[in-house]
Length: 262
Image (cartoon, rainbow, N blue to C red; front, side, top):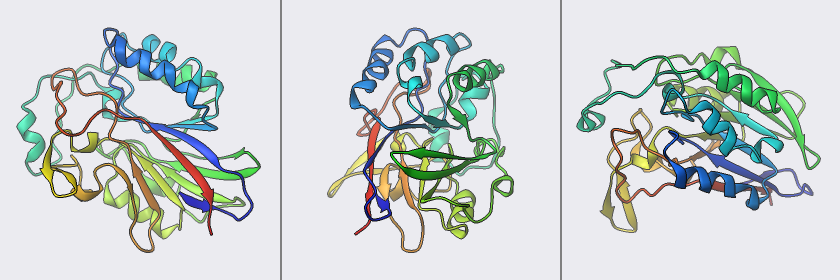
């Protein structure tokens, strides 16, 4: 992302999302622990850490080394409620806003554990941090998929900063539009799983759904629309425990390098 002012050093951002961790996901836990070797300057998590009532200590252990790096995060619906069996074909149907939830998860314990190590909760707040002499203003929203978002709580022109970024779990268009109006430089999101099931398509593959109102061509990766902030959507690392399938949308975490604009 070429969004830094001229002369500023590159900033390496580790962006991950949708871990959906349970105590049994040993391979995924090992992968997360290995990410410290990427030497990020900043970590951004766009939610859905949890998929089990006993997953909070698992998450904090997996992230232990990364928690020594400056971090920003928001929560997704699966941080608040345990997953329950659902017909996966419903993801392909129109979204009518009806949700079925499992038991409440101990998200407050996760929040306390992340903040204790210095990560910043952006669910309804703005913060400013300096990375490699670049001042970054960050703002975020709570989960739009559960309609917990209220962008007005963080809206407004950026303050005294070099760049301004937005962080949200589910990239609903109402949030992207609010951040566009405030002229942010970039937005980080998750939730889509990259479509989770993608079809072969000329030049790659095509998502069937984003599980929100984001167009399917923006289901994963870095996309650009004229006069809008750059949008980076993580396809995520995990899946819900009852839909353990990904087709042509492999698990991922991303190393996004901010560079000076030319």
